[in-house]
Length: 328
Ligand code: TRP
Image (cartoon, rainbow, N blue to C red; front, side):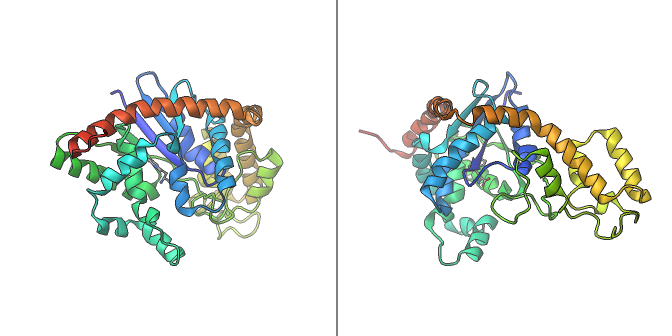
């Protein structure tokens, strides 16, 4: 079936290896002839936790370079900044009229923010999922690949679309959620994150840097000495990533060696670092080439914004009509 795939990422920093492996590699795969792919940087969502306007401006451009270097192709995908489409926040306002406040207060990511910053609960944090619903419903996405933390937000968008359609007649496409993004553990065994713990691997790291970084990776805590037998299933940050990047033959050797106690964690980590470095090399070459091409990125975003806007405008026009809003 022809799909319309949409996903976004906040402009809080550069991509790390977890995003690359778990999310963006997936986005790349959807770029096949029958599909329409929309990938955007959610710069408006970033404002809910804005620290520095300069950083936001800069992160946006750098992240698009990362996206493109990782294989997103402006010829095959619509790549844009959320703020290039003013109809998105407009749609968010319309949708907010159909959204009970209580559900928003029960969203896990919201509750977390309240716990973390009890004195900075701005309204944007509360309406975050409604803006996200506008991102998704505006372009009439049929498939939304997201990480597990975003599942309640996409569920909310689906409910919101259903509620609107019930009241005003078929207007929105109700998207399928695709929770098949891969969870990549960071060096401490928790999900690799860019803003939280210092557990991420930089996708621009050299092979030596990747090796040094992985030396700190948490493995099987019961394998204490080099020649103790270990259990790959208990390994927290190294073997799970071997599963994602290492070929089957080498991986079975690793399993056997670990269990027999003939393979040390250091050697196993070095193998992983080597494989990661190899996987990242084509990305890094392309990324280096894009480093100075800010004008090109601006063109990509300008063009992507225009193309996204065409689709979204159509939906928003219909929504206005359904709700009785006439622009004079
Ligand atoms: N909230 C998402 C995140 O933090 C980013 C996002 C914004 C998004 N709008 C979206 C993801 C629409 C998917 C679809 O990762």
